[in-house]
Image (tube, rainbow, N blue to C red):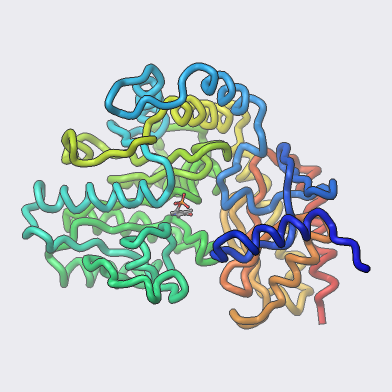
Length: 425
Ligand SMILES: *Cc1c(COP(=O)(O)O)cnc(C)c1O
């Protein structure tokens, strides 16, 4: 009789009792530290997903866990019916850190995107005098902004969208990285209130736009008086080798004057994921008063948004990014990673290309979107001690925690290239 491993038992119980809304890699994790994860059999892995970039600071960062524990013993939740002594300092910290006048706290990424949509529409009606219920928001095809019923209404992924209708109206999709499409859509639709964009499309497969796309989009948004909304839930907080992907080539660890011409300032900035240091859901949107002040008491809210745990954790999570210079580390290691991958690709028959910025990268496998080569490569990577997950069938995203060292990266490059070698024709 075949012996059932602990992993198989955990996978079976999850399959039997859980909703089948995910197709995880067959690994059951029980411990994490820095760039490493351990499964229930005690096998050790490099984490190359970082919980979709929520764990930029590494697993169980001691400073973040210390703050989490201390706050948990002090005060966890008050609701916004009352003030708490963490929220004000957190709002001051966040607005200084990112260079905006106001912050709205929330919990998950999708919740923050929803808030951004509401504020954009209300700004359109009250500041731009758009006709009631006619406001439109331009979005990009292949976007990923979350899973709520409104957000999936403007997804172009049939699996995310089909049979979940009726879909919410009011969104105008254009191709990503297509400045002419943005210009034409703005010119043709007078009721546009905003343009919602990922500075790099992470879920779609780490699509990086042309270097001037964001700056040109910014100029068009200003010209047509519409809000530019940057969803940096995945790209923000050091991941791409800049504090934010909209910072361009600036790699400082916090808001700076950004004399370099590369900073593209959105009207609304959406953050989530690594704002938590991978511990506890925290998201936020930032904007100046001219935009944020469209919200008045009673018009928006969240029971857990701005709770003292989230505030304390997020401040520490951002301080770790700054103190450990993780943005600069992501920039340096990202260059080395892509150089190593390009050297491999030069003699590879199965890897088409590598793309990305900082430590948000992906390789494209020479296979159809429905093929299973990328999945099989990820299974082999797991056997060789590295966890990554395919996206859109033939793309593998590589996004390790930003606390990785150069020696560890070289170790990982060896694991990845020797695994890929097994699949060469
Ligand atoms: C993950 C993600 C979201 C959704 O965040 P959740 O916390 O899963 O709701 C939204 N936008 C982008 C770009 C993301 O990567």
